Image (cartoon, rainbow, N blue to C red; front, top):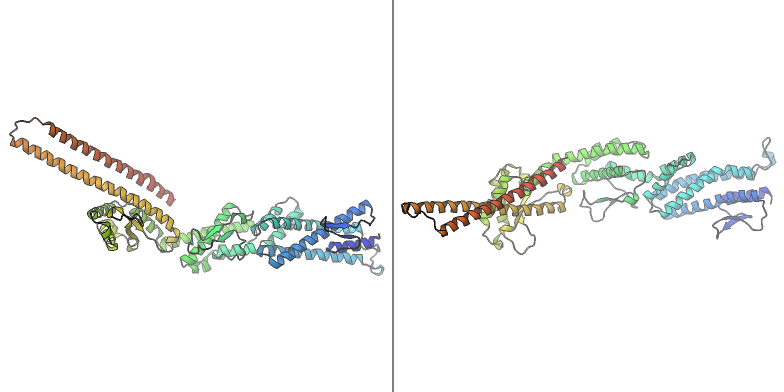
Length: 501
């Protein structure tokens, strides 16, 4: 076979077109030399290596065509860079074909009548072959993954390769392929808006949770996180966007987000990992400071949390005592006769009888006296408990589940306080009865004129029983004091210190 004819065949094959001597073999999924073609072993090896370009070209073009019909954002951006590289490849093929078709009149000094030889073709296609292999390998791995961040992770692993050619080529691929990711990321960390129509970003909006702005509206899809974003940066990116969304929607602070938010600190080259890291850390500090300022100053978050501690956890002793006394006066009333205004009157009376009356009305109006067991059949004054109702946006920060736990703790503490109050009442009654008994004994001795001072067995038994009763009551009171000290100092105070830190 003439070298010119074989070269013309290879030019076609390099574009994914069958030639006369080299054709596509479906069984081997590669271009192969026709069996009736007789070539030397070195020539056959070079032709097989050059034919690999045709197979790689077909695979890449098939992927580009498939993505063009139904591809998602990351895939379309990746294919954009693939098209650019393939355009450069086809330009090279056109130049090689022009070299092949040179006529004697167009030859330069010292040039062969064949402007292109098989060895020259092999040498000029070494670098394009490496590029096509890299693209085909990336495509194969991307098709096995879930898309989205998987594509960026696959390319990022090549960026760390020790080969300078692979590293520089992969950086170009990554820069173009990560354009949609960077656009979504910038929108999220600068405006708190998640614009991800194909759900490719590693932060997802949960359906049916649009009212849970803080705890459940957004989640992190760990399998979509690119490898060049570590766990700490992922957490900060999630916090920034969630906080900005909370400020805009729940706190009505969109003006600050637009005029003074992270967008004012946005860097030009967000695709550079170091620039992105610096921007994320600066933005996280700025947004967290603004969020805490709004919650504390405008919505009095710490004031409400202190009210929770003082009244639901009964750290305000005079209020707890006043409430127990009012409830003790109502204990004999039937639960069927208890109305909403009765509960409100009891709470108001306890507030007026303690220093709680000097609290801002905002905190007092959040306290509600209700029955401890919701929906229970038995409803009485011994089952009432204290509830604290937060309004938006604080109700998003401290959700219903947490407030339910506070309510259960408060219900337990109310019962504890009721038992303690009852024990104190019993102790006072015992002391009164003991003194009355002692006075009656003294009067009896005086009337008898001191005669018959010997104490009968019945009197000794009575005094002993009263003494034992007083000791038992004192021990129970001591036990409840120890329980309350443990709850107040070891549990509540310790948790409060951790919370403040």
